[in-house]
Image (cartoon, rainbow, N blue to C red; front, side, top):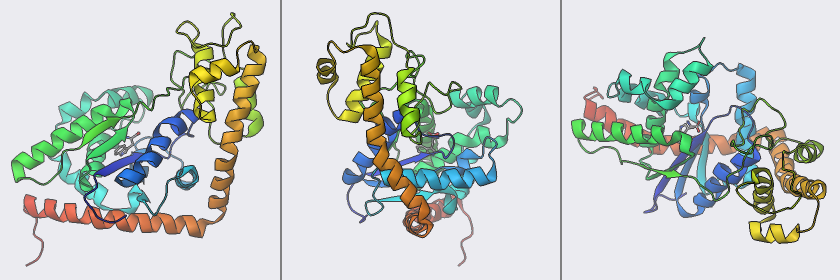
Length: 334
Ligand code: TRP
């Protein structure tokens, strides 16, 4: 990753919950595609993860699993900095400064804060409320041009822009004001049990989501149980959300269009169609899972990727942080 005139991309994902095939088709795929065109920094956001209670050993395990999964999916450590957020102390340091430019009222109004406060009513901690400020610090440290995120994170990127502008106005031009890139990815993958809802990594119904970690039999079983309709004709249409979703998934994992998939399955019964989708997904996941397993067994190699990622990230972050410390008037030695 040479410093160049290329635009800078920053994104991060929390090591909480298991990634689904929806994440694979969306976020992960986009990260992989963007690394060729941009200078990318990708973090495993463990500082964000502890805003809800985590079992320490699980958090560590998931951090490594997620890192291994990204590499297995094609994130190339030669092309981007893949690192663990807490390994670069500048994130927490900049967040502190940005806190002083952020108002309690605007944090209380954040949609995700309100949702999570309801969900974790017994643990509405300061970190949960401060979550968007830490995210702003993540992004602004790297002078990112673009921030690829799901639509649920758009509000956080908008507040990041506000905070950046506020800092720049008060202390002089310091941060690049980033733009969100809302990932549509063409394919929106829905729950297998309720195709009106997005497939989610935190769904309570275990049959609703297919996880990247599911073994072959589990994948096939979940597709067999997918909710469909009573028409018995494999075609995509608004009044057939279950079948439409299965066709979308098939097209993503087979690398064909939905129209081609419809043609392939015309006249085929739902049972056979569901099996074919399940097998296609299981076939596509197998090499990724094998590679992830291989990486997890070679902790030295994976650790090396993460430490060189953190080093590159640190170099970029340090520049911005020194500028900030200087601008706000911190004593930096004579
Ligand atoms: N909050 C994001 C999520 O849960 C993860 C994240 C943390 C992030 N820091 C970020 C995303 C900075 C983009 C940029 O999805």
